Image 1: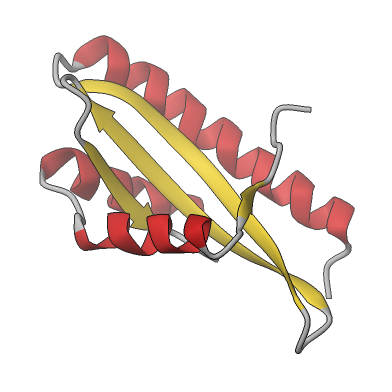
Image 2: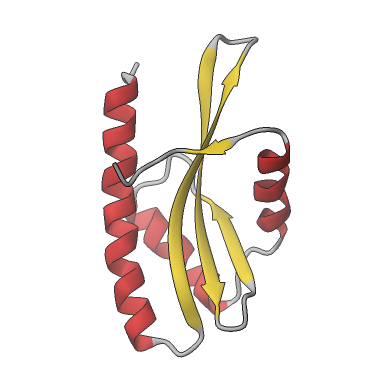
Length: 112
């Protein structure tokens, strides 16, 4: 089992990978405004541990968003998910992402 520090390092590495792809997309696309890698977490009382959910969020010019759950994915799988988001999206996962926020999940700070 991973320690919290190991888990956060893994998430930061994934974020760095997505950030690099994001910069390339933002420079080459007129429709993509921003790409984010977001990790949500909430303590689970039943299992006495934190639960983590990973997402890639693409924000398009005009404000529309497409969201993909990528929990546990490799960089290669995240690249495929990102390509799908840019080309058409997974709009049903926006509702799932928003429902987790409504349930009290919070974003993990991957900047520090």
